[in-house]
Image 1 (cartoon, rainbow, N blue to C red):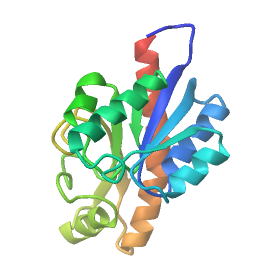
Image 2 (image 1 turned 180 degrees about the vertical axis):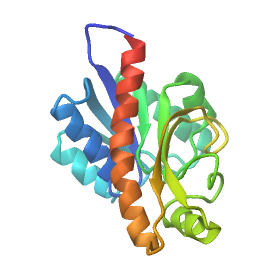
Image 3 (image 1 turned 135 degrees about the vertical axis):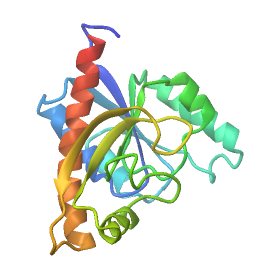
Amino acid sequence: MVNNQNIRLGFLASHNGTTMQAIVDACIKKSIQADPVVLITNNSSSGAIHRAKHMKISCHHLSSETHPDLEDLDKAIVKTLRQYSVDLVLLTGYMKKIGPHTLKNFNKRIINSHPSLLPKHGGIGMFGRDIHKKVLESGDEITGTTIHYVVQNYDSGQIIKQIEIPIFPTDTIDSLEDRVKLEEKQLYIDSINEIINNWK
């Protein structure tokens, strides 16, 4: 990586983009020495698009609507990330599997957050509120959130950082989700900083 330039961040998001917002805010405050440069979304009406436009971040809608062939879509994502010279790709609520071309071209440069202590409560079908429901049903006394590198299999990449979060007897899906999301955003920011520092 080039030491005298800020790392360039690319985001992939499907929904509201609140985690993206937290990361961009940290960049603005110089809590992260990086430049948010592009958002790719598979949802043309996502909240993330509105947030990105408000923050003057370039937006691209790339999905099965724009590219019905999965390989073509995968290559379009790579092309767009390269167009903006992205160094680090951040999945912030992106609900599609990353394709092999993107994984190859951005090996060890794609990271994701997962709202549990992986490898527990991870894998196919484990996302959003379903995770917190499973955690509560399991009887676990501790949950948490994980930042990890993205590889071919869901939620199985090398763990970068984790934080434990206690589960209270009074917890509901909503209360647990709120606490995990709060910790998740800061852990993501800390993980980005750790990666950037290791690249210097």
